[in-house]
Structure formats: C-alpha cells, structure tokens
Amino acid sequence: MKRLLSGIQPTGKLTLGNYIGALQQFVKLQDELEDTELFIFIADLHAITIPQNRQELKKNIRSVAALYVACGLDPNKVNLFVQSEIPEHAQLGYVMESTAYVGEMERMTQYKDKKGKQAEGIRTSLLTYPALMAADILLYDADIVPIGDDQKQHLELTRNLAVRFNNAYGQTFTVPEGYYTKTGARIMSLTEPTKKMSKSAENPKSYILLLDDLAQVRNKIKSAVTDSDGLIKYDPKKKPGISNLLTIYSALTEYSIKQLEEMYEDKNYQVFKADLAEIVADALRPIQSKYFEIMNGTELDKILDHGAEKARVVAQRKLVKVYKKLGLGRIR
Ligand code: TYM
Image 1 (cartoon, rainbow, N blue to C red):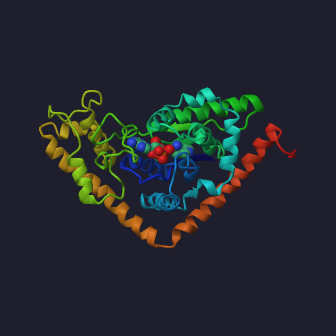
Image 2: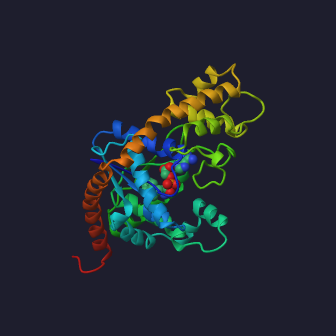
Image 3: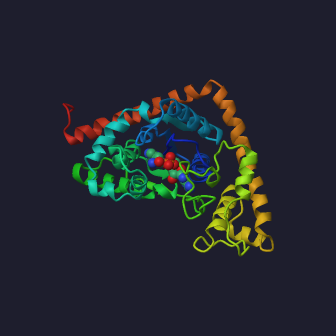
C-alpha cells in the first residue's frame, strides 16, 4: 500500500493558487489512485513561524478543514487532521533539525524571501521550517507529495534528509516523490504576474480567494494585468499576464493551453477575460455553498477526530523506530 501526504498552512484565506496547485490535485488523486492511503492535514505548527492572532488562527484551522471537504475531499477516503494534534510531527521535526545542516536551511529561497521582507524579530522556526516539513512527510513514509512549484525546494531537501538518515542509521524512511500539475504548478499574481499569487500579498486585487464574493471574483479577473499586443498566446516570459490567465483557464476546464490559443485566436482580451471570469465563478460557486454548509454543521470535528486517530497510529510507530535507531531514551 502506498501513501500520499500533503498539507496547507492555515494562514489567512486560501487562494485560487492553493486550489489549482494543491486542493484540486488532492481531489483528482483521491479519485484516481488505487491502493493508496491518503493523509492530508492542516499545517498549523508551520503557521506560528510568523506572529498569529490566536482567535484568527483557530478560525483559519477550521476554515481550511472545511475547505478540504468543500473542494471535494471525501473523509471516507482521506484522513484529514490537524498537525499539532499529532505531537510526533514536532518530535520528528527536532530529529530532522539534527539531521539537516544550517547552510541547507539558509539556502532555502522561501526563507530568504520571507526574511528579506522582515527587518527584525525573525523567528528561529522560520529558518528550521523545512525540517518540520520533512518530518511531516517522512513520519508517514509518504511516497507521493502533491504540492505547488514553490514547495519543490523543500521537497528536494526532504529527499536529501531521508537519504542521509537512511545512510547513517539503516533503511528507515521512504524517499518521497513530489507530484506537480502540468499547467498549474504556479499560479501568478493578477496584478504583478511575475510574482506568485499569494494570500499574504498586500493588494487584494492580486489574488482570488476561494471565499471571495463572486462579483468581486469576476472583477478581479476582468481587471487582471495583461500586455498591450492583444494576442492570446502562451509565453510566460514575454506575456506573463495572459499566460497566467491561460493557465488558470486550462486548469479549471478540459482544454489544453494549445486548444485555448486556437479557440481565442481571433478574439480580444476582453472576450477572453469575460469567459474566464464565468469559468472561475462557476468553479467557486459549489465550493462556497458546500463550505458554509460544513461550517454550520457538526460533522467537521468528527472528521478531524477520525483522521487524527488514523494518523496517530502511523506516527507513533514511526517515531519509536527512529528514536530506537538513534539510541534515544531506554527503548531497546
Ligand atoms: P502553503 O500553505 O503555502 O500552500 C499550500 C499548497 O498550495 C500551493 N500553492 C500554490 N500552487 C500554485 N500556485 C500558487 N500561487 C500557490 N500558492 C500556494 C503550495 O505549493 C502548497 O502545495 N510548507 C507548505 C505546507 C506543508 C506541507 C507539508 C506540504 C507543511 N508540511 C508537507 C506538503 C507536505 C506550505 O507552506 O504550503
């Protein structure tokens, strides 16, 4: 039996980038993969690498959990759980810190970016974050890790740490493979299409939130930055704006980018954007109605309790094995 694992941080609201890069993939894989156990969690420990408001964090944890289900994850097929409820994540995270080198952590692009934006008060956990992410993955011997392009470097590090540990202590961890979408591995900002669409960006017009009002969603798509030559062609270097919109269109429909270029050969940006606005709104409508139904219901806690129970069994067993290999404590 293989294992799939992935997670999303409960910081702020989830975006269309999270949906296309991660959530949509989770649902697709849940339906396609056979003989695979799925673990999908809410990465709340990762959220405290930067300051969080307690009430907001609580709300966001529930909100991400509800979005998992609203986007189509079936709790009968997937173990959904909250990371901090399984203490082995933090425990193996420390072991991974004791496997990784400081230089490796300092080289992580995401750390350098985030550090660059913050003058002081950078938390140690922002630096050691990839060790915790490696632990999240290795704790479950995950074979497949569906992620967006921005997490690729962290996955590579995880693979290196698994190999290093295995070489030092004997076969212990499965070396995981990343799983990326062909078109949507990186959805870009609508206002600055050379940057990633991010929930932490300052300009709300740059991202689409899964829970945005649909009229707002349409407006954001219609006012997305494009170039002035008017050709609907995929060329991320020269035409990042329209290329990003083509990527979104393709990810949410059955059409390939090539087919879209042909369909819109004689059309202008306005027509293309109006069509895309409807496609995005149509994709979000059912997610939003399901989301509110779940948030108002009583099922969510049961789903997360059940998921945590399943996760705990796997995690506990693995951590004991690792401690034993390291010679920690009195376990024989
Ligand atoms: P996070 O919470 O930043 O993002 C969750 C997932 O969404 C993807 N994503 C995107 N994909 C395409 N375009 C975008 N603009 C975009 N923005 C975000 C991310 O690549 C990610 O797959 N460290 C992780 C959470 C994590 C994790 C793990 C993931 C913790 N432990 C173990 C996998 C396995 C993170 O911060 O993702």
